[in-house]
Image (cartoon, one colour):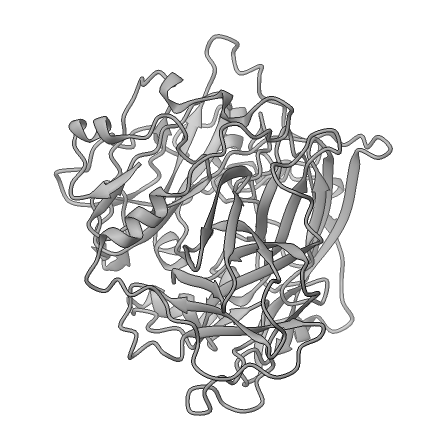
Length: 543
Protein backbone atom coordinates (compact mmCIF):
# COMPACT_ATOMS: atom_id res chain seq x y z
CA UNK A 1 0.00 0.00 0.00
CA UNK A 2 1.98 3.00 -1.20
CA UNK A 3 1.36 6.18 0.75
CA UNK A 4 2.11 9.84 1.09
CA UNK A 5 1.18 10.76 4.65
CA UNK A 6 0.47 8.32 7.44
CA UNK A 7 -3.01 6.83 7.68
CA UNK A 8 -4.64 4.35 9.99
CA UNK A 9 -7.01 1.82 8.45
CA UNK A 10 -9.88 0.42 10.45
CA UNK A 11 -11.60 -2.85 9.55
CA UNK A 12 -14.63 -3.52 11.73
CA UNK A 13 -15.69 -7.06 12.65
CA UNK A 14 -19.21 -6.81 13.91
CA UNK A 15 -22.13 -9.04 15.02
CA UNK A 16 -25.64 -9.12 16.44
CA UNK A 17 -27.70 -9.34 19.46
CA UNK A 18 -30.71 -10.66 21.15
CA UNK A 19 -33.37 -8.48 22.70
CA UNK A 20 -33.98 -11.09 25.40
CA UNK A 21 -31.89 -10.62 28.56
CA UNK A 22 -31.20 -13.53 30.82
CA UNK A 23 -30.23 -12.91 34.45
CA UNK A 24 -26.53 -12.24 34.80
CA UNK A 25 -25.90 -12.40 31.05
CA UNK A 26 -27.03 -8.96 29.98
CA UNK A 27 -25.84 -5.38 30.37
CA UNK A 28 -28.31 -2.50 30.03
CA UNK A 29 -26.92 1.00 29.56
CA UNK A 30 -28.27 4.37 28.60
CA UNK A 31 -26.09 6.93 26.81
CA UNK A 32 -27.32 10.48 26.32
CA UNK A 33 -25.32 12.62 23.88
CA UNK A 34 -25.58 16.36 24.42
CA UNK A 35 -23.57 19.57 24.22
CA UNK A 36 -21.93 21.05 27.30
CA UNK A 37 -19.42 23.84 27.79
CA UNK A 38 -15.94 22.82 28.91
CA UNK A 39 -12.49 24.42 28.90
CA UNK A 40 -10.00 21.57 28.32
CA UNK A 41 -7.31 23.96 27.02
CA UNK A 42 -8.31 26.96 29.12
CA UNK A 43 -10.91 28.59 26.84
CA UNK A 44 -14.64 27.72 27.01
CA UNK A 45 -15.88 25.69 24.06
CA UNK A 46 -18.77 23.42 23.11
CA UNK A 47 -18.01 19.71 23.51
CA UNK A 48 -20.12 16.57 23.18
CA UNK A 49 -20.75 14.91 26.52
CA UNK A 50 -22.15 11.46 27.25
CA UNK A 51 -24.45 11.36 30.27
CA UNK A 52 -23.12 14.81 31.11
CA UNK A 53 -19.52 13.56 31.19
CA UNK A 54 -16.55 14.42 28.98
CA UNK A 55 -15.19 11.88 28.10
CA UNK A 56 -18.15 9.54 28.38
CA UNK A 57 -18.52 6.69 30.89
CA UNK A 58 -16.80 3.34 30.51
CA UNK A 59 -19.04 0.45 29.45
CA UNK A 60 -17.93 -2.72 31.25
CA UNK A 61 -19.22 -6.04 29.94
CA UNK A 62 -18.17 -9.70 29.99
CA UNK A 63 -17.53 -11.91 26.99
CA UNK A 64 -20.69 -13.47 25.49
CA UNK A 65 -22.90 -11.02 27.37
CA UNK A 66 -25.76 -9.38 25.54
CA UNK A 67 -25.46 -5.62 25.48
CA UNK A 68 -28.41 -3.25 25.24
CA UNK A 69 -27.52 0.43 24.88
CA UNK A 70 -30.25 3.03 24.55
CA UNK A 71 -28.82 6.12 22.84
CA UNK A 72 -30.56 9.49 23.28
CA UNK A 73 -29.58 12.09 20.69
CA UNK A 74 -29.86 15.57 22.23
CA UNK A 75 -27.57 17.06 19.60
CA UNK A 76 -28.84 19.31 16.81
CA UNK A 77 -27.76 16.90 14.05
CA UNK A 78 -27.99 13.20 13.17
CA UNK A 79 -26.04 10.73 15.30
CA UNK A 80 -24.66 7.19 14.98
CA UNK A 81 -22.50 5.40 17.53
CA UNK A 82 -19.92 2.90 16.33
CA UNK A 83 -17.99 0.27 18.26
CA UNK A 84 -14.78 -0.41 16.27
CA UNK A 85 -13.29 -3.84 16.83
CA UNK A 86 -16.27 -5.15 18.80
CA UNK A 87 -17.18 -8.41 17.08
CA UNK A 88 -20.95 -8.21 16.70
CA UNK A 89 -20.76 -11.46 14.85
CA UNK A 90 -23.16 -12.37 12.03
CA UNK A 91 -24.96 -9.03 11.58
CA UNK A 92 -23.89 -5.53 10.61
CA UNK A 93 -27.17 -3.91 11.71
CA UNK A 94 -25.58 -2.49 14.86
CA UNK A 95 -22.35 -1.26 13.24
CA UNK A 96 -23.19 2.43 13.54
CA UNK A 97 -21.86 3.79 10.22
CA UNK A 98 -23.84 5.31 7.34
CA UNK A 99 -23.14 2.49 4.91
CA UNK A 100 -25.03 0.05 7.10
CA UNK A 101 -27.34 2.05 9.39
CA UNK A 102 -29.71 4.98 9.08
CA UNK A 103 -28.89 7.78 11.52
CA UNK A 104 -30.68 8.67 14.75
CA UNK A 105 -32.36 12.06 14.16
CA UNK A 106 -32.05 14.94 16.65
CA UNK A 107 -34.34 14.75 19.69
CA UNK A 108 -34.72 10.99 19.19
CA UNK A 109 -33.44 7.77 20.71
CA UNK A 110 -32.62 4.32 19.41
CA UNK A 111 -31.54 1.09 21.07
CA UNK A 112 -28.46 -0.88 20.04
CA UNK A 113 -28.59 -4.60 20.83
CA UNK A 114 -25.64 -6.91 20.29
CA UNK A 115 -23.70 -9.76 21.82
CA UNK A 116 -19.96 -9.49 22.48
CA UNK A 117 -19.51 -13.01 21.19
CA UNK A 118 -16.28 -14.85 22.06
CA UNK A 119 -14.32 -11.66 22.68
CA UNK A 120 -12.29 -9.89 25.35
CA UNK A 121 -10.20 -6.75 25.46
CA UNK A 122 -9.99 -2.96 25.31
CA UNK A 123 -12.02 -0.83 22.90
CA UNK A 124 -13.87 2.49 22.77
CA UNK A 125 -17.09 3.87 21.30
CA UNK A 126 -17.62 7.17 19.49
CA UNK A 127 -19.97 9.07 17.13
CA UNK A 128 -19.24 8.25 13.48
CA UNK A 129 -20.98 11.16 11.71
CA UNK A 130 -20.25 14.79 10.89
CA UNK A 131 -16.74 14.94 12.41
CA UNK A 132 -18.40 14.71 15.85
CA UNK A 133 -15.57 12.70 17.42
CA UNK A 134 -13.43 15.85 17.21
CA UNK A 135 -15.83 17.35 19.79
CA UNK A 136 -16.01 14.32 22.11
CA UNK A 137 -18.78 11.77 22.49
CA UNK A 138 -16.28 8.97 23.12
CA UNK A 139 -15.76 6.56 26.00
CA UNK A 140 -14.07 3.26 26.84
CA UNK A 141 -15.63 -0.14 26.14
CA UNK A 142 -14.08 -3.00 28.11
CA UNK A 143 -14.86 -6.71 27.66
CA UNK A 144 -13.67 -8.93 30.53
CA UNK A 145 -12.90 -12.65 30.53
CA UNK A 146 -15.30 -15.21 31.93
CA UNK A 147 -14.21 -16.18 35.45
CA UNK A 148 -13.48 -19.71 34.19
CA UNK A 149 -10.93 -18.51 31.63
CA UNK A 150 -7.61 -17.32 33.10
CA UNK A 151 -5.79 -14.25 31.85
CA UNK A 152 -2.10 -14.75 30.95
CA UNK A 153 -0.82 -12.62 33.86
CA UNK A 154 -1.45 -12.12 37.56
CA UNK A 155 -4.71 -10.31 38.27
CA UNK A 156 -3.84 -6.61 38.46
CA UNK A 157 -4.59 -4.56 41.54
CA UNK A 158 -6.67 -2.13 39.53
CA UNK A 159 -7.88 -1.06 36.10
CA UNK A 160 -7.16 2.43 34.72
CA UNK A 161 -8.61 3.91 31.53
CA UNK A 162 -6.66 6.64 29.70
CA UNK A 163 -8.06 8.35 26.60
CA UNK A 164 -5.55 10.46 24.66
CA UNK A 165 -6.05 12.52 21.54
CA UNK A 166 -5.14 15.68 19.65
CA UNK A 167 -7.61 18.52 20.16
CA UNK A 168 -8.78 21.71 18.45
CA UNK A 169 -10.42 24.66 20.20
CA UNK A 170 -12.60 25.12 17.11
CA UNK A 171 -15.74 23.00 17.33
CA UNK A 172 -16.41 20.10 15.00
CA UNK A 173 -18.73 22.15 12.79
CA UNK A 174 -16.02 24.73 12.16
CA UNK A 175 -13.49 21.97 11.43
CA UNK A 176 -15.67 20.24 8.85
CA UNK A 177 -16.53 23.63 7.30
CA UNK A 178 -12.81 24.18 6.80
CA UNK A 179 -12.46 20.77 5.14
CA UNK A 180 -15.46 21.44 2.92
CA UNK A 181 -13.76 24.67 1.81
CA UNK A 182 -10.62 22.75 0.83
CA UNK A 183 -8.56 24.01 3.78
CA UNK A 184 -6.12 22.00 5.86
CA UNK A 185 -7.02 21.74 9.55
CA UNK A 186 -3.56 22.86 10.56
CA UNK A 187 -1.75 21.99 13.76
CA UNK A 188 -3.97 20.94 16.69
CA UNK A 189 -4.18 23.27 19.67
CA UNK A 190 -3.11 20.58 22.12
CA UNK A 191 -3.42 16.98 23.31
CA UNK A 192 -5.95 15.94 25.93
CA UNK A 193 -5.61 13.15 28.46
CA UNK A 194 -9.00 12.02 29.77
CA UNK A 195 -10.53 15.21 28.46
CA UNK A 196 -8.13 17.52 30.27
CA UNK A 197 -5.26 19.71 29.15
CA UNK A 198 -1.59 19.47 30.08
CA UNK A 199 -0.05 19.80 33.51
CA UNK A 200 2.00 23.02 33.63
CA UNK A 201 5.39 21.41 33.22
CA UNK A 202 6.66 24.47 31.30
CA UNK A 203 5.34 27.93 32.17
CA UNK A 204 6.08 29.24 28.68
CA UNK A 205 4.31 26.46 26.80
CA UNK A 206 1.36 25.83 29.15
CA UNK A 207 -0.78 28.75 30.35
CA UNK A 208 -1.87 28.93 33.96
CA UNK A 209 -5.34 27.76 34.96
CA UNK A 210 -5.65 24.62 32.80
CA UNK A 211 -7.09 21.60 34.60
CA UNK A 212 -5.04 18.41 34.26
CA UNK A 213 -5.60 14.72 34.97
CA UNK A 214 -4.13 13.12 38.11
CA UNK A 215 -4.09 9.33 38.37
CA UNK A 216 -3.65 8.11 41.93
CA UNK A 217 -2.01 4.76 42.66
CA UNK A 218 -0.65 2.73 45.56
CA UNK A 219 3.09 1.98 45.78
CA UNK A 220 4.12 -1.59 44.97
CA UNK A 221 0.86 -2.43 43.18
CA UNK A 222 0.43 -3.38 39.52
CA UNK A 223 -2.29 -1.80 37.40
CA UNK A 224 -3.73 -2.64 34.00
CA UNK A 225 -3.64 0.67 32.13
CA UNK A 226 -5.79 0.72 28.99
CA UNK A 227 -4.82 3.52 26.59
CA UNK A 228 -6.97 4.61 23.61
CA UNK A 229 -6.10 7.22 20.97
CA UNK A 230 -9.46 8.90 20.33
CA UNK A 231 -8.02 11.91 18.50
CA UNK A 232 -8.49 13.43 15.06
CA UNK A 233 -5.36 12.50 13.12
CA UNK A 234 -2.18 12.65 15.23
CA UNK A 235 -0.14 9.60 16.20
CA UNK A 236 0.90 9.98 19.84
CA UNK A 237 3.86 8.52 21.69
CA UNK A 238 2.76 7.35 25.14
CA UNK A 239 5.11 7.05 28.10
CA UNK A 240 5.14 7.20 31.91
CA UNK A 241 8.23 8.73 33.47
CA UNK A 242 10.59 6.11 34.98
CA UNK A 243 8.03 3.29 34.58
CA UNK A 244 8.09 0.30 32.24
CA UNK A 245 5.04 -0.41 30.11
CA UNK A 246 4.55 -4.19 29.91
CA UNK A 247 2.35 -4.65 26.85
CA UNK A 248 -0.31 -7.30 27.51
CA UNK A 249 -3.21 -6.82 25.05
CA UNK A 250 -4.35 -4.82 22.06
CA UNK A 251 -7.91 -4.60 20.74
CA UNK A 252 -9.02 -7.99 21.96
CA UNK A 253 -5.85 -10.06 21.60
CA UNK A 254 -3.35 -10.88 24.33
CA UNK A 255 0.12 -10.03 23.12
CA UNK A 256 3.53 -11.48 23.73
CA UNK A 257 4.48 -9.61 26.90
CA UNK A 258 7.25 -7.13 26.22
CA UNK A 259 8.49 -4.09 28.12
CA UNK A 260 8.50 -0.70 26.42
CA UNK A 261 9.67 2.65 27.75
CA UNK A 262 7.34 4.29 25.22
CA UNK A 263 4.95 3.16 22.48
CA UNK A 264 3.44 4.90 19.46
CA UNK A 265 -0.36 4.74 19.57
CA UNK A 266 -2.03 5.69 16.31
CA UNK A 267 -5.50 7.19 15.94
CA UNK A 268 -8.16 4.58 16.68
CA UNK A 269 -5.81 2.13 18.42
CA UNK A 270 -6.10 0.69 21.94
CA UNK A 271 -3.49 -1.00 24.14
CA UNK A 272 -3.34 -2.58 27.61
CA UNK A 273 -0.18 -2.20 29.68
CA UNK A 274 0.72 -3.75 33.03
CA UNK A 275 2.52 -1.07 35.03
CA UNK A 276 4.04 -1.75 38.45
CA UNK A 277 4.42 1.19 40.82
CA UNK A 278 7.98 0.32 41.76
CA UNK A 279 9.57 3.76 41.95
CA UNK A 280 10.28 5.85 45.03
CA UNK A 281 7.71 8.39 46.14
CA UNK A 282 9.98 11.39 46.36
CA UNK A 283 7.79 13.10 43.75
CA UNK A 284 4.96 12.61 41.28
CA UNK A 285 5.66 11.34 37.76
CA UNK A 286 4.73 12.61 34.31
CA UNK A 287 2.35 10.74 32.00
CA UNK A 288 3.04 12.01 28.48
CA UNK A 289 1.35 11.77 25.07
CA UNK A 290 3.29 13.72 22.44
CA UNK A 291 2.88 14.10 18.68
CA UNK A 292 4.92 11.91 16.34
CA UNK A 293 6.21 12.34 12.77
CA UNK A 294 6.13 16.13 13.07
CA UNK A 295 8.60 18.99 13.52
CA UNK A 296 9.05 18.79 17.29
CA UNK A 297 10.26 22.39 17.61
CA UNK A 298 6.97 23.62 16.10
CA UNK A 299 4.75 21.07 17.84
CA UNK A 300 6.10 21.39 21.41
CA UNK A 301 2.81 22.70 22.76
CA UNK A 302 0.89 19.79 21.18
CA UNK A 303 1.76 17.56 24.12
CA UNK A 304 -0.53 15.99 26.69
CA UNK A 305 0.79 15.75 30.24
CA UNK A 306 -0.98 14.12 33.18
CA UNK A 307 0.32 13.22 36.64
CA UNK A 308 0.89 9.79 38.20
CA UNK A 309 0.65 10.26 41.96
CA UNK A 310 1.65 7.64 44.53
CA UNK A 311 -0.45 7.75 47.71
CA UNK A 312 2.70 8.52 49.70
CA UNK A 313 4.14 10.99 47.21
CA UNK A 314 6.32 13.67 48.77
CA UNK A 315 6.41 16.28 46.04
CA UNK A 316 5.18 17.57 42.69
CA UNK A 317 6.58 16.55 39.32
CA UNK A 318 9.25 18.93 38.08
CA UNK A 319 11.92 19.12 35.40
CA UNK A 320 11.85 18.13 31.73
CA UNK A 321 9.48 15.55 30.31
CA UNK A 322 10.84 12.07 29.55
CA UNK A 323 12.29 12.08 26.04
CA UNK A 324 10.33 10.79 23.03
CA UNK A 325 12.01 8.34 20.62
CA UNK A 326 15.06 9.82 18.93
CA UNK A 327 14.47 8.36 15.48
CA UNK A 328 14.45 11.38 13.19
CA UNK A 329 17.08 9.74 11.01
CA UNK A 330 16.04 6.14 11.66
CA UNK A 331 12.90 5.11 9.78
CA UNK A 332 13.39 1.53 10.86
CA UNK A 333 12.58 2.32 14.51
CA UNK A 334 8.84 2.81 13.96
CA UNK A 335 8.52 -0.29 11.79
CA UNK A 336 10.53 -2.47 14.16
CA UNK A 337 8.50 -1.28 17.13
CA UNK A 338 5.21 -2.01 15.35
CA UNK A 339 6.42 -5.44 14.21
CA UNK A 340 7.54 -6.32 17.74
CA UNK A 341 3.88 -6.50 18.80
CA UNK A 342 3.10 -10.20 18.47
CA UNK A 343 0.21 -12.44 19.42
CA UNK A 344 0.59 -14.47 22.62
CA UNK A 345 -0.10 -17.72 20.81
CA UNK A 346 -0.23 -19.95 23.90
CA UNK A 347 -2.55 -17.77 25.99
CA UNK A 348 -6.29 -18.30 26.21
CA UNK A 349 -8.47 -15.54 24.85
CA UNK A 350 -12.21 -15.71 25.33
CA UNK A 351 -12.00 -19.52 25.62
CA UNK A 352 -9.71 -22.02 27.34
CA UNK A 353 -8.13 -23.03 24.03
CA UNK A 354 -5.08 -21.00 22.97
CA UNK A 355 -5.94 -17.92 20.93
CA UNK A 356 -3.02 -18.84 18.67
CA UNK A 357 -4.80 -21.99 17.49
CA UNK A 358 -5.80 -20.03 14.39
CA UNK A 359 -2.93 -18.96 12.14
CA UNK A 360 -2.84 -16.63 9.20
CA UNK A 361 -1.09 -19.34 7.19
CA UNK A 362 -4.34 -21.32 7.18
CA UNK A 363 -6.19 -18.61 5.23
CA UNK A 364 -6.72 -19.59 1.62
CA UNK A 365 -6.13 -16.54 -0.56
CA UNK A 366 -8.93 -16.08 -3.07
CA UNK A 367 -8.60 -12.34 -3.76
CA UNK A 368 -5.93 -9.70 -3.26
CA UNK A 369 -6.74 -6.00 -3.06
CA UNK A 370 -4.01 -3.38 -3.22
CA UNK A 371 -5.37 -0.21 -1.58
CA UNK A 372 -3.32 2.84 -2.49
CA UNK A 373 -3.62 6.14 -0.67
CA UNK A 374 -2.55 9.39 -2.29
CA UNK A 375 -2.42 13.03 -1.16
CA UNK A 376 -5.74 14.91 -1.28
CA UNK A 377 -6.79 16.23 -4.66
CA UNK A 378 -9.70 18.06 -6.25
CA UNK A 379 -12.55 16.02 -7.69
CA UNK A 380 -15.43 17.97 -9.20
CA UNK A 381 -14.10 21.10 -7.53
CA UNK A 382 -13.94 19.56 -4.03
CA UNK A 383 -10.93 18.47 -2.00
CA UNK A 384 -11.15 14.70 -1.47
CA UNK A 385 -9.14 11.71 -0.30
CA UNK A 386 -9.23 8.45 -2.21
CA UNK A 387 -8.52 4.73 -2.04
CA UNK A 388 -7.47 3.32 -5.40
CA UNK A 389 -8.63 6.54 -7.03
CA UNK A 390 -12.18 6.41 -5.63
CA UNK A 391 -13.51 8.82 -3.02
CA UNK A 392 -16.46 7.17 -1.31
CA UNK A 393 -19.88 8.81 -1.21
CA UNK A 394 -22.35 7.37 1.29
CA UNK A 395 -25.53 6.10 -0.39
CA UNK A 396 -28.88 7.62 0.60
CA UNK A 397 -30.06 4.14 1.55
CA UNK A 398 -27.55 2.08 3.57
CA UNK A 399 -26.07 -0.85 1.65
CA UNK A 400 -27.45 -3.45 4.03
CA UNK A 401 -31.00 -2.10 3.74
CA UNK A 402 -30.69 -1.83 -0.04
CA UNK A 403 -29.78 -5.53 -0.15
CA UNK A 404 -32.66 -6.53 2.12
CA UNK A 405 -35.20 -4.77 -0.10
CA UNK A 406 -33.49 -5.59 -3.41
CA UNK A 407 -33.01 -1.93 -4.32
CA UNK A 408 -30.84 -1.33 -7.37
CA UNK A 409 -28.66 1.66 -8.06
CA UNK A 410 -28.01 2.56 -4.43
CA UNK A 411 -24.38 1.44 -4.61
CA UNK A 412 -21.92 -0.38 -6.89
CA UNK A 413 -19.86 -3.54 -6.41
CA UNK A 414 -17.06 -2.35 -8.65
CA UNK A 415 -14.33 -1.29 -6.23
CA UNK A 416 -11.06 -1.92 -8.12
CA UNK A 417 -8.61 -4.52 -6.85
CA UNK A 418 -5.73 -2.30 -7.96
CA UNK A 419 -5.33 1.50 -8.16
CA UNK A 420 -7.15 3.10 -11.08
CA UNK A 421 -5.05 4.26 -14.01
CA UNK A 422 -7.66 6.83 -15.08
CA UNK A 423 -8.79 10.02 -13.34
CA UNK A 424 -10.03 9.74 -9.74
CA UNK A 425 -13.76 9.93 -9.09
CA UNK A 426 -16.35 10.21 -6.35
CA UNK A 427 -18.51 7.08 -6.24
CA UNK A 428 -20.49 4.59 -4.14
CA UNK A 429 -18.14 1.69 -4.87
CA UNK A 430 -17.93 -1.24 -2.45
CA UNK A 431 -15.82 -4.40 -2.42
CA UNK A 432 -17.56 -7.62 -3.53
CA UNK A 433 -16.46 -9.95 -1.57
CA UNK A 434 3.22 -7.56 8.08
CA UNK A 435 4.78 -4.34 7.24
CA UNK A 436 7.63 -2.67 5.28
CA UNK A 437 8.88 0.26 3.21
CA UNK A 438 8.62 0.79 -0.53
CA UNK A 439 5.92 -0.29 -2.96
CA UNK A 440 4.12 -3.58 -2.27
CA UNK A 441 4.65 -6.32 -4.85
CA UNK A 442 3.60 -9.95 -5.07
CA UNK A 443 7.07 -10.90 -3.86
CA UNK A 444 6.46 -8.97 -0.62
CA UNK A 445 4.32 -11.87 0.60
CA UNK A 446 7.47 -13.88 1.30
CA UNK A 447 8.20 -11.55 4.23
CA UNK A 448 4.83 -11.99 5.98
CA UNK A 449 4.68 -13.23 9.57
CA UNK A 450 2.22 -16.13 9.34
CA UNK A 451 2.84 -17.51 12.82
CA UNK A 452 2.06 -14.94 15.51
CA UNK A 453 1.06 -11.77 13.66
CA UNK A 454 -1.18 -9.56 15.75
CA UNK A 455 -4.92 -9.80 15.13
CA UNK A 456 -6.50 -6.36 15.39
CA UNK A 457 -9.05 -4.02 13.81
CA UNK A 458 -6.90 -0.88 13.35
CA UNK A 459 -3.48 -0.95 11.69
CA UNK A 460 -1.08 1.84 10.85
CA UNK A 461 0.45 2.41 7.41
CA UNK A 462 3.60 4.52 7.46
CA UNK A 463 4.49 7.20 4.89
CA UNK A 464 6.04 5.56 1.85
CA UNK A 465 5.27 2.10 3.21
CA UNK A 466 2.77 -0.73 3.06
CA UNK A 467 0.92 -3.02 5.41
CA UNK A 468 -0.47 -6.44 4.47
CA UNK A 469 -3.75 -7.57 6.03
CA UNK A 470 -5.13 -11.09 5.72
CA UNK A 471 -8.85 -11.42 6.35
CA UNK A 472 -10.88 -14.60 6.63
CA UNK A 473 -14.32 -13.72 5.23
CA UNK A 474 -16.48 -15.78 7.59
CA UNK A 475 -18.84 -13.01 8.72
CA UNK A 476 -21.69 -12.27 6.31
CA UNK A 477 -22.80 -8.65 6.16
CA UNK A 478 -21.54 -5.24 5.08
CA UNK A 479 -18.38 -4.02 6.83
CA UNK A 480 -16.67 -0.65 6.81
CA UNK A 481 -13.03 -0.21 5.73
CA UNK A 482 -11.80 3.32 6.38
CA UNK A 483 -8.99 5.65 7.26
CA UNK A 484 -9.32 6.26 10.99
CA UNK A 485 -7.83 9.75 10.56
CA UNK A 486 -10.99 11.86 10.75
CA UNK A 487 -10.05 14.34 8.01
CA UNK A 488 -9.31 11.54 5.51
CA UNK A 489 -12.44 9.62 6.52
CA UNK A 490 -14.66 12.71 6.25
CA UNK A 491 -13.28 13.45 2.78
CA UNK A 492 -14.02 10.02 1.37
CA UNK A 493 -11.18 7.65 2.26
CA UNK A 494 -13.34 4.62 2.97
CA UNK A 495 -15.29 1.83 1.33
CA UNK A 496 -17.36 -1.18 2.39
CA UNK A 497 -16.87 -4.89 2.00
CA UNK A 498 -20.09 -6.71 1.14
CA UNK A 499 -19.77 -10.36 2.18
CA UNK A 500 -22.33 -12.98 1.19
CA UNK A 501 -22.49 -16.69 1.86
CA UNK A 502 -23.88 -18.19 -1.37
CA UNK A 503 -23.76 -21.73 -0.01
CA UNK A 504 -26.30 -20.96 2.69
CA UNK A 505 -28.13 -18.05 1.02
CA UNK A 506 -26.92 -15.80 3.84
CA UNK A 507 -28.85 -17.73 6.50
CA UNK A 508 -25.76 -17.42 8.71
CA UNK A 509 -26.56 -13.72 9.17
CA UNK A 510 -29.20 -12.68 11.67
CA UNK A 511 -32.27 -10.86 10.39
CA UNK A 512 -32.72 -7.13 10.75
CA UNK A 513 -33.70 -6.11 14.30
CA UNK A 514 -37.32 -5.18 15.00
CA UNK A 515 -36.35 -1.56 15.59
CA UNK A 516 -34.33 -1.08 12.39
CA UNK A 517 -34.37 2.53 11.16
CA UNK A 518 -35.32 3.40 7.58
CA UNK A 519 -34.11 6.30 5.44
CA UNK A 520 -33.39 7.22 1.83
CA UNK A 521 -35.57 5.30 -0.61
CA UNK A 522 -37.16 3.45 2.33
CA UNK A 523 -38.08 6.47 4.45
CA UNK A 524 -41.81 5.73 4.11
CA UNK A 525 -41.30 2.48 6.06
CA UNK A 526 -40.14 4.27 9.20
CA UNK A 527 -42.49 3.57 12.09
CA UNK A 528 -42.55 5.74 15.18
CA UNK A 529 -42.44 2.72 17.48
CA UNK A 530 -38.95 2.04 16.11
CA UNK A 531 -37.80 5.53 16.98
CA UNK A 532 -38.40 7.19 20.33
CA UNK A 533 -39.02 10.92 20.07
CA UNK A 534 -38.53 13.38 22.89
CA UNK A 535 -38.80 17.12 23.24
CA UNK A 536 -37.27 19.93 25.30
CA UNK A 537 -38.77 23.03 26.81
CA UNK A 538 -36.28 25.27 25.01
CA UNK A 539 -35.36 23.44 21.84
CA UNK A 540 -33.66 26.55 20.47
CA UNK A 541 -30.98 26.21 23.17
CA UNK A 542 -29.81 22.99 21.52
CA UNK A 543 -29.13 24.65 18.15
